[in-house]
Image (cartoon, rainbow, N blue to C red; front, side):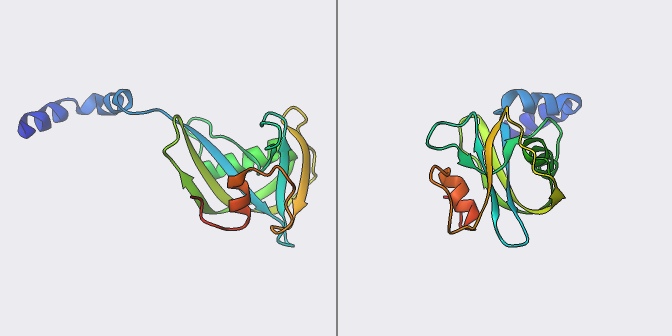
Length: 150
């Protein structure tokens, strides 16, 4: 039986990727940047579309098709805040969610002028990791403190 399946799979070589796409789960990729400045403060944003009482979090958004996740961090931070960042190491990869995978990277502030996108962001603050505002998303709090995401 295994040999038969192997032969069928070899026969399907020209369309294997399409078969795999059809048979496997599809996800959107949420990408987050833990943006820190030279003083060690982290950039927190109060997001317009997030639930009341849990609106504070890190810059984030969804990766576009074919986009490198580091590029997503740079793009989302720029779109939401007008700031330029350099992306560092991967700090979170979280799967097991229904239709979403979450990825987070450390990022360092390079410059730019803080200009919030009012359609997405209500407020921005630079915070020390031990002095975060109320209503910070749990995962953001964990990432800011450099802890392992459960």
